[in-house]
Image 1 (cartoon, chains in turn purple, yellow, red, brown):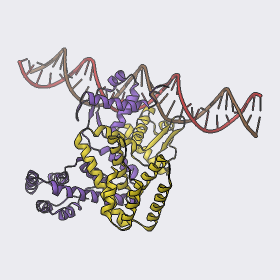
Image 2: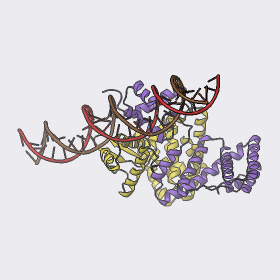
Image 3: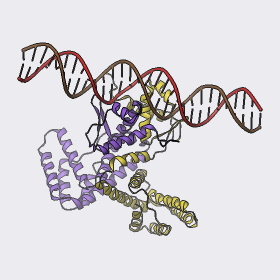
Image 4: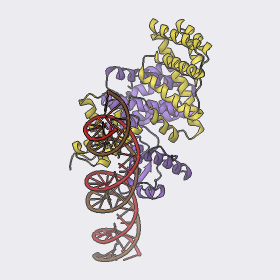
Amino acid sequence: MSGTSEKVYVEIIKKIKTIIEEDDLQAGDKLPSERELTDRLHVGRSSVREALRSLELLGLIETRRGEGTFIKPATGHRLVEVLASFILHDQKARQDLLETKSIIIRDCIELAVQRVRPEDIEYLNGLIREIERTKHESDLQQLILRFQESVIKLCNNHLLYRLWVELSDYGLSVHQHSFLLHSGECSQLLEHLKNGDSKNVIQLMSQTM
Amino acid sequence: MSGTSEKVYVEIIKKIKTIIEEDDLQAGDKLPSERELTDRLHVGRSSVREALRSLELLGLIETRRGEGTFIKPATGHRLVEVLASFILHDQKARQDLLETKSIIIRDCIELAVQRVRPEDIEYLNGLIREIERTKHESDLQQLILRFQESVIKLCNNHLLYRLWVELSDYGLSVHQHSFLLHSGECSQLLEHLKNGDSKNVIQLMSQTM
DNA sequence: CCTTTTATGGTGGTCTGACCACCATTGACC
DNA sequence: GGTCAATGGTGGTCAGACCACCATAAAAGG
């Protein structure tokens, strides 16, 4: 007859969300400790932990032993990992994954060529100069990955960008490694981008599956 | 120095996945009880519960008090709910959402017109006949929703379809209600589909935000 | 005075045991 | 044969205990 038919741990998740909003907590900020939440919400610590563990698996928070629980910047890594391992069973699913990623890339680039600004070009130019200067292989990979991400980000749609990131991670869990452009292709891509030639940009980025 | 630096509840999730694979459990099947998992995996029941609650929040399993824990068919409802409430804070995010959904719809339709088969047309025709016969408002909404879903599904890419579903649910949590076609528009849409006229199909489906 | 070391309190991580509410089945009763 | 109560299994929740880890403060050393 009471109001709360919801499970306690789901209620706690909502309360935590309320706390975040009321205290205006941002990514990186510390949440109240498990024991404090236990006292404030009048529930058992195990229920608090069930709520926190769920949010952790979703990638929304991060717990550091001996320190506390912290809000994570919104990326769906863990989520992807779990969903991927549960969902990517059959061949059809993998094929759909590749097709979808290809489509999302195309969508991003089409928006990108419309929305790219001079300062974006300048930034990418700087990256390419760094890429050409770099001697170390590991640094090179880092830079090229950042270049690719930056190109996708030009779509100026964070949700679409995140979809790309998640699909890339899905793919990673299938292929075990990611595909990077060569340094020469980066400067080619930038040229096409400057010319508004979306077709060739898409063709290049589609290699980065 | 041991192998397991991972948290116990994450290990348990992996073990559960293994159990599902080895026993070839399908959606709807029952998982071992919490106490049995406790014994089999040599861990505490609270850790087992942390794992199960996490999977429940992800929408991968369902627990029924007094009965047991069951595997759910893969849909991301709860996930969407949680992510939406946590992520959809600012106006930009909502704008990105609408744009992304619009793009995904376009992608689905473009694939759909390439892949639609005669039997699909026949099925949609049947739905339209039902829609025209129906008198009850609630039945009508159900049918139109199924029609819209069926059209999206024609893309024959389950991942893309699920993205659409999730984005629709996101949108639902913003708008509090969904937008349906009118019954007349359904038959118009089917005509365009038969003619391979993706532009007009996209235009109609884009209203269903 | 400053640096290093040690002690301490707070934090998450895990396990155990207990009790409750709920459900399905069984078996006694009518 | 049908009805209903007892029973055992299940998830739901709580309380307490102990451990490992971290940051800080206090004490020791230079």
